[in-house]
Image (cartoon, rainbow, N blue to C red; front, top):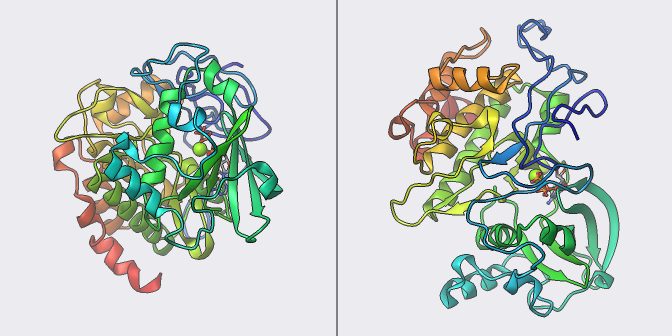
Length: 390
Ligand code: ATP
Ligand code: MG
């Protein structure tokens, strides 16, 4: 597949098919394309042609192809091709819960205890596909499809992601896949998509997740965005809270973007796709270049060591995109986007309010240590001003 293959009138910019491809170009997204509403707020043209906004890593190896292909490659993936050695997941008997991150007995039991501690009835049961009524297809991921399913015995409704084992092996992402599952299973927060557990059969691994009825925030942004201050501030607050929770557990997300955020009832957001998430122990810094072009921070582009402040930068980009309709450094080429990011070439359309500008500017500080702490995001004057209207 070419980098700029178009699908219909809009190319989805997510990481489903080309996570590990070279960065692709954004098409037809230059200045002057936005029409203005009476309020002066630019409308998002749903027919606007966009590039795929690809998540990637430095060590990209997986060839992109149509359908459930592509994948996340990480420098530290040590599995040999053809080996499905995701031991806790694939080689074990059917389980409904994955081990906790790092699999220490203590953490493991903590992860197990999260299952069923809310209303999930799936705790410790041995499950198979026969236990579910499979409903509507919700979407397609790199290694499989996501369906809405109902657990026959209890009527519990959730999302089931079915992934082919041979594709996980083919793209040699067993280790990364296991880490993604472990991290997501260990996280429990109202704005993080819950992973209830998993089971597998001969051909596939199935992940059971919380079902988010309104799908991707990205689609919502294309059809209903950009958002006003009230809605955007509520979204930003929720994401700041979710990231604060992850960072307090020393987990970096590293791929924040509207494509990786799901929308539930009452404008509740849930961050998802923990494929690039990683545990950062102590004050250790990371070096792997990964994420999505428009959301990369200067230190990532400059291949410097980085920490959880890359997520804070990405939250700044997200805030801008929610209010404006496109990310702040968007250009027609990767090189130009990178230049603008490194120069911190931040330009606000007139309709962005002073308080929102202040928050975005404080999140998009060039120096990571100067970025606004997430706790302060939650009490920023822009948030406080809009909070009564949520
Ligand atoms: P990528 O990493 O490239 O985004 P993926 O393999 O992580 O792909 P997902 O993003 O998890 O795949 O799922 C594909 C699509 O299925 C999503 O874009 C979304 O539309 C839908 N989907 C996934 N999980 C859920 C869920 N819990 N509730 C509702 N819809 C979901
Ligand atoms: Mg995704």
